[in-house]
Length: 210
Image 1 (cartoon, rainbow, N blue to C red):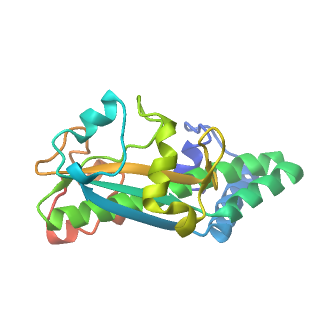
Image 2: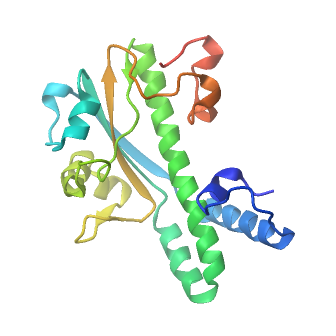
Image 3: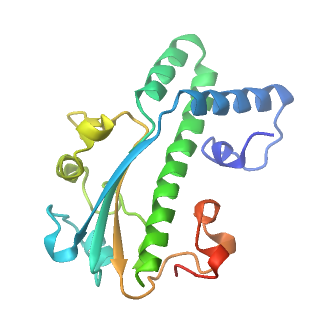
């Protein structure tokens, strides 16, 4: 059976799948993991030393009370984009299935990074907010050039921007995480429902990040 997460990005809500479709979904997930080359980078700053402006009320609320701010970027690489273009010419259904698998894969890589940040923060007695990306709320995509420049993401990861500030490779994520002296509202209250549980290194030692 195909993983539930790629299915979620296809709008799956319990419909019956034929064995043939399940096999194609599994094949596109495997192909995505084969061609993807995940890479990431991050930088942390004290709140006062943050070297870029983050306009908008939503990000201001998100970072209120933070003592540090971590910026990060993660990408699956251009191989995924090349495969999407190839499938668009040869098999539109497989392109849709591959795109869903790639969306799941990049979110999974971002989850991995966020889980590591929470672990590192907990070791210092700090608590992370959830990741907040340009384009969320009223934080505009216009901050992408400055954010990528601070991370040196073009040189380190090969991420560039279109004229409308969309990232290439398309399966890339940038995000902002606040580090706070107290637990933050809006995060999972239980490890059992936490989206980062797969990558958590804290539970074995009896430590919680919220």
